[in-house]
Length: 51
Image 1 (tube, rainbow, N blue to C red):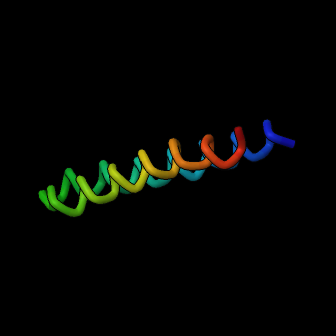
Image 2: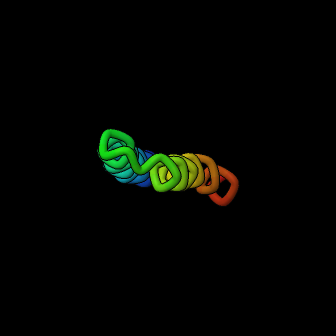
Image 3: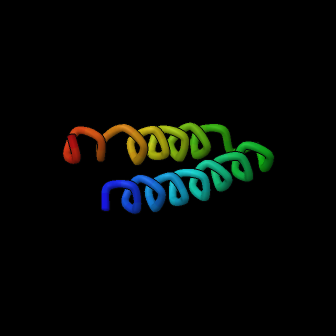
C-alpha cells in the first residue's frame, strides 16, 4: 500500500513540476518558484507522515 501512495505522490509531483516549468518559460519566475516549493513540499512532507 505504501508503494501505491508513493507512486501516486510522485505522479502528482511530476505533473506539478511540469506546470512550474511552463510558468518559468512564460517569464513568471515568482509563480514558478512557488510551484517548485509546492512540488518540494509534496515530495517531502508525506514521508514524515508515512514513516
